Image 1 (cartoon, rainbow, N blue to C red):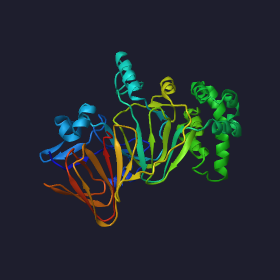
Image 2: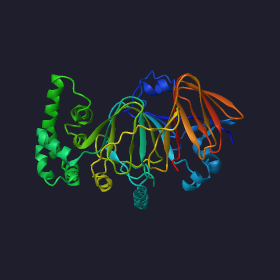
Image 3: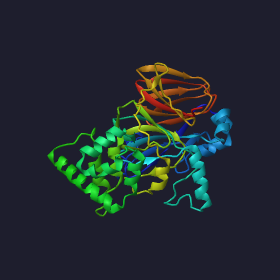
Image 4: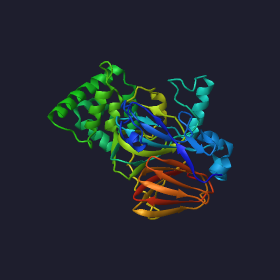
Length: 404
């Protein structure tokens, strides 16, 4: 088994993506100014990476399926049935993503089987379960990053409804401070009533914007953008309510956050590295042209208030910082090399690791071969292979592997 295998990822050109970060990372010209939203490094059927082998390039999924134990390691190959359990990504979020949540593993298996039995095609627009897997995810910010994450406390929500004139009519729904009752009421409101409640808010925000810039630390800033981007035929998107009910979180570069099943969230702006279980199961609640399944979303949401936990990472050694999560599917590490000749020995890891060079350049060597990898390069090290990584100056890499 070759110890170091160069990979080529797949770019997804979703319309919310940025125009510069990924083209610059990958040294790819973008003369048409296309949105480069995500770089995928994995075996997801919607975008499988390719592996560069001596006899030519092959699909990473095919490469792993030919020798799953050799590539993934015995424990991971057995536990995940011979499949790479994670999807590794770089995201450039220029426009906010949908209000969303993900199922547990058991719920995904039940929902996937149910929709299969109904004969709903996997590619159908209205399908909610694309596979039988859960989708926990961890991210680390590569630039200043903003997101929504979990419901605010009952006290904070009550204050929001009290202090914002547009929301005062909702106070009668929140008398017992039951977040589920309030959110279900909002999500099931007829569109006409959504418009009636949100119209005064839009007027407020237009007046505020005219008076001067709004701070990104205020939900008003993001709600103003949502009105601009998601008003359709004079109708307002009910996802705007979520901007005021969820925690607004700022993640500085180098810090992270974990999002488990049922925790509502939405990425708002910034660039990050993201690692998730290999799934495409999403329940959306607004701010998107994609399928919105309110009953399924409400069934799986965690309505318990969340205090966002920003991850600092654990310093394993002078180079490696790990971002631990409870997910068995993945583990994310940041490798920071300072100055030329900083070195790291990776000794026979129990499972495969995918690396991406975000900044600088490194020499990666095994007993049989040496490679030079610079910014944007991706490579795989199979299980039980030993490598040495040496910097050629300051360098930043991220590494993804199974979390078992």
